[in-house]
Every structure is written in C-alpha cells, then in structure tokens.
Length: 186
View 1 (cartoon, rainbow, N blue to C red):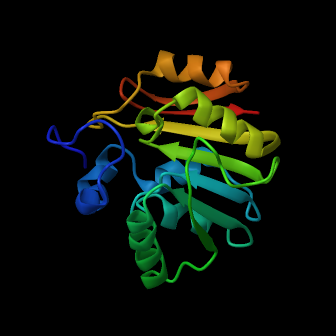
View 2 (cartoon, rainbow, N blue to C red; view 1 turned 60 degrees about the horizontal axis):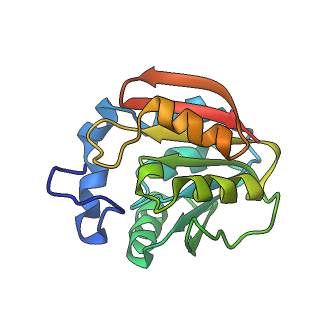
C-alpha cells in the first residue's frame, strides 16, 4: 500500500509489491470490487493503471468469455501483472503500455472500464475520463474506486463532479469517506 513516503503520482514500480499486501483487502477485496462491477461473462473490460494486478485476477475470472485489457504507463508494472496473472493461470488478459491521456484504442471498444486508486494519479483526471468516455460503448460502465491510505485519493464529491464534466451519468455509489466506488454510465 502507498505510504506517507510516496510522492504524488503513479506508484513507482520499485515499490509495487506494497500494492499486493494482503491487508489491502480489508479496505476493498478484489472479489468485492468484481461484485460491484457486475460484469457480463463476455465483457471487454479496460483496467487503467493496474499496477501489479491486485484487482485484475478477480475481474478477469468474472469474464471468462471476455477480455481484460490492462493499460499502464509503466512497462515494469505490466511485466509484474503479466507474471502474476500467468502464474495464477489467468489467460484472458491483454497488456498494453500507454497513457490514459491518449488511450491507444478505437472509439466504443469497451463494455466497461475501471480505475482503482488511480484517478488522482493522472496528470489531468478530467482529460483521462474524457478518453475513457471515448473508448466505452454507448451505455458502457465506468467504475472509479478510491481507497483510504492512497496519497492521491480524491474525495467522493470531486470524483462525481469530474465524472459529470466528462459526460458520465453517476449510477451507484458503494462505501463512504475515502473508501468508495462510483459506478457511472456513458
């Protein structure tokens, strides 16, 4: 988990193992996030900023006929996620190094997208959300999770405002305070 020694912005790949700490599940377990997303088994899903893949395994397993696309700006994070998911036998995943400010995907490519403890790390969160809006299919789901302990965490009113400004309709919120998930539709 991020600590007070972590500067704002993306977690350095050299400290990524902290993101896999089992106690992180006390804030939000990967299975709980997967249930919040409620994805169809054949969904095409984009995870922006997966780090070493803490939530990726659970999400990929909920879409056995679909594909989970992991996009991270750091190649080292993607390598860690690939190693972890392959070791656990998760094969319906694609890995792409890229920037959330300019997603390298076509318009309307995904049924859903999610960010977990990532939105506040983006240099321009509104621009990142606009890009996600672009690559989601009409009525596509965007899920934004913020977690306590993250030095880049945004408050719920701030996240909701950013979502609306990027053209999303807030549909449901889980949790409170600095530990919450907001589901919104394109």
